[in-house]
Structures are given as C-alpha cells and as structure tokens.
Amino acid sequence: MKKGNFSKSKTLDIAKRVLLKPTESYEENTKELKDQKTTLISGLILAGAMTIINLITAMINSIFVKTCDFWTGKCKTKIAFSGLENLDYFNLILKYFLMYAVLVFGIAAIIYILALIYKKNTTDYVKLLRIVILSFIPGIILSMILGPLFGIIYGPLNIFLSMAGSIYTMLIIINLLKDEIKLKETDNLLFMSIAFTLIYVLQYYIFIKLIFI
Image (cartoon, rainbow, N blue to C red):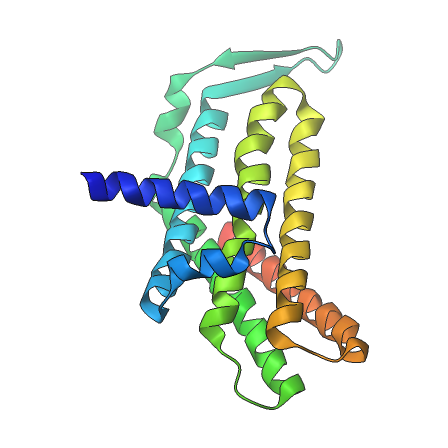
C-alpha cells in the first residue's frame, strides 16, 4: 500500500517539476525513467492516460447536449445520460490508444532518424523517447485537463489552453534536444524545422487514418 502511495507521489512530483521547471528538472526526472523497460512502459502509460482523458471527455460531451435555435440564435444545454449508450467504447479506446502510442513513439523515431542523419553516429532512441514523454506532460495538463475545465466557464479558454499546451510542449522538446543532440548552431534551426514538419505530417496522418476510419 505504501509502495502505491509512493508511486503516486513520485508521479505528481515529476508532473509538477516538468510543468514549472521543464528544462532545469530534466536530469532529476530522467532518474525516474532510468532504464529502457521503464521508459517504454512509461510511453504506453502516457498513451493510456491520454486515452482515458479523451474517453471521459467524449462521455461528458455525450451527456451534455447543446441545441440551438436557428432563428433566435439561442442555445440550450440539456442533460441526457442516454447518450452514453450510443458510444462505441471499445472502438474509442482502441483508436485513441493507437493514435497516442504511435504519436509518442513516432515523434521520438522521427527525431532519432534525423539525428542519425545529421550526426552520422549512434543516438540513443530511449533518451529521445524520455524527452518526448516528459515534454508531453505539460501539454496534457494544460490542453487536455485544464482546457476543458476552464472551457466550461468560458469557451475560448479551452482553445487558448490547448494552443498553450501544444506550444509549451514544442518549446520543451526544442530546448532539451539542443542539449541532447548537440548540433551546430547553423544546423539547429534546419534540424528543428524538418523535425517539426515531419511531426505535424505524422499528426495529420494519424488523425485522418485513425479518427476518420
């Protein structure tokens, strides 16, 4: 029992450090992901966490149904628990988990391949995966947890926090990659531009293939 509480405490400590001091706390956080097995499992847990959050969001959206009158422009929100019966839970869980797992491991793979091309020597994929995992945590907190919550109070806050979460994650990845890959200053901008272009292509491909199939 104590072991479980310790694990939860460690997880919260990592989330707090990554959110408030992402680059400064990187070395300390990586100690918690000390080996390959732990890092790979953490990547799957991260995908699972995002899947659960999205599933809960889908359930809430199915309960609160908004209807708008075309002529008056007025909207009403009603609660209908019957909407929960219309959700295909297995399909949703499978799609979201695959989407996020491919995204997390795929981003690390893109950076890994580019690093090999630029540096022409062995780069540790697991280290890059750790960077992606830790960088995703602030994005999840801001865009997937705080965004929907504050969006209930004021709709545009959801959009703002979602964008802020994505940008924050991107900036953390960029800063941590500088120290990990150690490219020349002249190559750094081009490397990041190519990497994030490929990452956005991956995101678009995953979204189209897994959400709309």
